[in-house]
Image 1: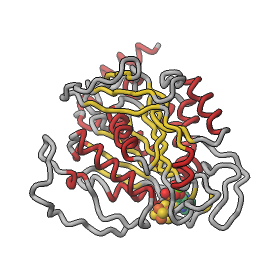
Image 2: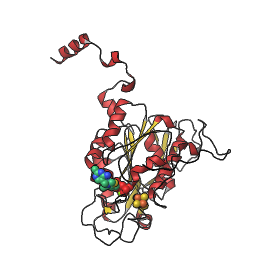
Image 3: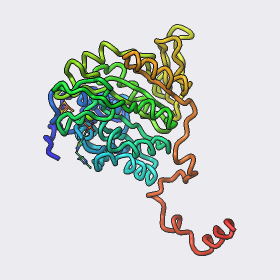
Image 4: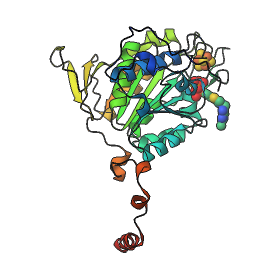
Length: 351
Ligand SMILES: Cc1ncc(C[n+]2csc(CCOP(=O)(O)OP(=O)(O)O)c2C)c(N)n1
Ligand code: SF4
Ligand SMILES: [Mg+2]
C-alpha cells in the first residue's frame, strides 16, 4: 500500500492528554482518498475519540478488509497494531486476535461492500458471537475502490452516477445486527462530527459487540441526485432519535439536564453514557421495537441515527467461553499443556 508519512513535528503548545499524547499522536499517514470523501471524516472522529478517551495507542488493534474504507486504518492511530486482511474477511481475523489477546481494544473498520456483500457471512458470525470490539462500517452504498458499482446496502430505486436504477432490496446492517444480538447498535453520518465522536467513544467503552453503521458519502460515485447516500440526501432525511455525552470515569458530572430527558448508563469500565432523548417514543433498550421503528422510518424515506440499541449489562465471547483472565497468548507451555495426568482426569470427567 502506498502512503505518505506525516512529519512528526507539531506546535509545542498543542494540548496533551493525561498520557502526554497530543491529538497528532493518534494520527496516521497522509490520506490518499479523494478530497471530501466521507471516510476521512470518520478517521478524524476515531482520532478524536481515542485522544479524548486517553487510550494508550499500543493497546489498540485496528483491523480491516479491502476497499477505500478498509485503507483508512493507515490514516489514523499510526502507533497502534494493524492488520489489513482479505476482502470481507476482517471479522474472522479480528475474532481470532481477540481470542488470543483479550487485553487489546479492537477496532474493525470495513465498507458496505466488505461487510454486506462479500463478507456478509463473516459479519453475521462475528456479531452473533458477541466479540468484544467496535465494528464500524463506512457505508456509501457503492464499491468505491472498484469504481462505484452498487453494493448490497444501496437502496432500491436509488440511481448510480450514470443513471442506472438499483432494483435489488438493500441489506440493512443495523437491522441485521439487532437481529443477531449485538449489544450496542448505532447509526451515524460522517458529516455529523458532534454525533459521531461520542458514539465512537461509547462503542469503544462498550463490553461486547458494538456496531456502528456510518453513512459516508463517496464524492466520486454516490454524491449525486438520485443517490440516497449523498451529503444532501442524508442531511435532508436524517432523523436523530437521541444525543449522547460520554463521561469518563475520572470526570465528575457537572452539567444537569432536564429531569426525565436524560438517561445515565454506567459502562463496564466505570465510564458513563448520558443519553438525551430527542424522539419521545424511541426506547433504545427494546430490541424488537427498535427493529420495527427502523423499518417504518426507512419505508418513509428517513435515515434514523443515534444510539439505536444498548444493552446495559452486556457480555462477550470470553464470558461465554469462560476463558482465563490472562490473555491466551501470554500463557506458558505448562498452562497450555498441563500434562498427561490432567488429560486423564479430564477424559474421565467426560465419561
Ligand atoms: C476477493 C476479492 N474480490 C473482489 C475484490 C475487488 N474489490 C476490491 S475493493 C471492492 C469493494 C469495496 O467496497 P466497499 O467495501 O464498500 O469499500 P469502499 O471502497 O466503498 O469504501 C472490491 C469488489 C477483491 N479485492 N478481493
Ligand atoms: S472513490 Fe469514493 S470511497 Fe473511494 S476515496 Fe474516492 S470518494 Fe472515497
Ligand atoms: Mg462502499
